[in-house]
Amino acid sequence: KVMLLTFLHTAGRRGEIYRLQWEDVDFINQRICLKTRKRKGGSLESDWIPMTEELTDTLKQHRKLAVNEWVFIQPKGQHKGKPYTENRGFPQTLCDKAEVKRFGCHGIRGLTASILAKHDVPMVAIRDTLRHKNLRITERYVRGLDSVRGHLKVLEVKTA
Image (cartoon, rainbow, N blue to C red; front, side, top):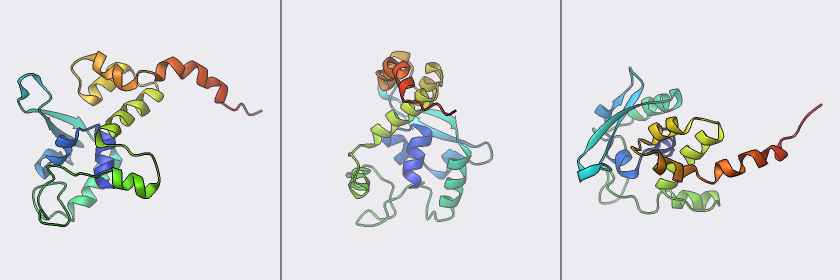
């Protein structure tokens, strides 16, 4: 649950979330540092992004259970206590349990963008949330939504 919330509230990429260490979480200023290699040349670049209150509170509780410097560690198996490098089956196994269509970690990133777009957050702000350098990339995440937005008005129920 904590990892899913972190993916959703940060729009983080899988590697960025798996690489998180507690030094990357600034509870005082409610921000989190995500490190990405999705830049020209593949060099590691850091971005401090704001955390929601819900994410801050959830990570504070999660911190109390921490056994080392990593925010997310493997709970069992031969790599127990070590950070994730890959997590095959996550979140697909959860999807199966919830009996919903399977999606991957990157799908959560798209979900964050879609939720923001649905609530009329400007595309530039969504771009900044996803930490894209190019607005066209961000538009790919939410394309298709704007073309139907006006038509969705017919679904609204007017109460007298």
